[in-house]
Amino acid sequence: MNTTTDGAMDLRFTPAQEEFRAEARHWLAANSPAPGSLPSLDTPDGFEAHRAWEQTMFADRWSVVSWPEEFGGRDVGILEWLIFEEEYWRIQAPVRVSQNGVFLLAPTMFEFGTDAQKARFLPPMASGEEIWCQGWSEPDAGSDLAGIRSRAERAPDDDGWLLTGQKTWASRGAYAEWCFGLFRTDPDAERHRGLTYFLMAMDSPGVTVRPIPQIDGEPGFAEIFFESVFVPDSQVLGGVGQGWSVAMATAGSERGLSLRSPARYTEAVSRLVSLYAERLDRDPARAARSADAVAQVWMDAEAYRLNTYWTASRVLAGGTVGPEASANKIHWSETDLAIYRTALGLLGPEAELTGGGGVAGNPWLDGFLFALAGPIYAGTNEIQRNVVAERLLGLPRA
Image (cartoon, rainbow, N blue to C red; front, side, top):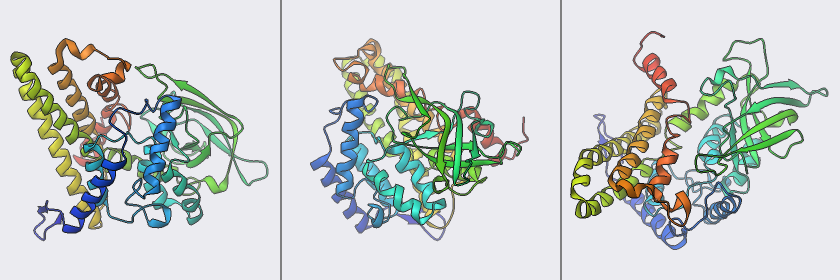
């Protein structure tokens, strides 16, 4: 798969890529837990069960296929990673408990990290030995990342920093070993300046973690309090005062290519089409009312897949993911919500049944409840629309 000389996309995979797909499919079929067999990763037992799965993947170099071999990867390209994701979601393998580290922090660390930081943090990140949470949002600064108030001051012996403040909505924060986030190191600087990107151990003295229940009652998030938490200079990523640039690289990964692979949606739509066919026999009138919605989300998921491969090809040709990532984030979050909303419409009153496993016993309801957060996390869609308007369309600020 590549871009031809006239700018068109050649959507055929190479023989080597198809061989890679076959190897990934065979390994996943032989090793992946049965769909839904692991407890929720937002429970203590489920978190550890998912960590064990990450370690199984790592042992055979499947956890981070696009990383260099020295850090546990297979040193393949981004297209192979997308192929692996297609196979991963096709077999409905477990949700990645390490995604904050592997999909968000790692691309940033490859770009801004020192050799020592990469050697220290990337292997245990890939293996699941160390799980990361994100420390960005604050009670008065959610999508307004430049408005953070948590601060960092030089330690008295000048060999590190003392961090003070509060972070909230830290996904995986209830159980994670490490946190990456922004703190204000120059309180007199302009909003987007004077910020520094830190890597913090969650067991450091002065760190207090308070789990936040999700809509299903499980602690998928946490608020984190920092009281003069010491962080050495070796855990500054990208340089003092450069936090905004480093954070935007992470945000680009979160909204762009790495966090939400298209297979997540194309496979969900495939199951939705099967549900539609089943309901067409059982309740033709209800299914008929959902026909247009099913067709629309199928087209939206396919459009996202094609756009992702186009973006990946552009990156391989030396391009970057710029403000287009905001349009991308709007699309995948709203497509996700539409898929599950359509499924609940097909199910009718049965959509409320939770089964013996609680909400998790009804994957369509469970998926819908999670999808409700999509337009909020990774920067609210309202903020993303402002970015699209100003940076892509060239419209004046409101």
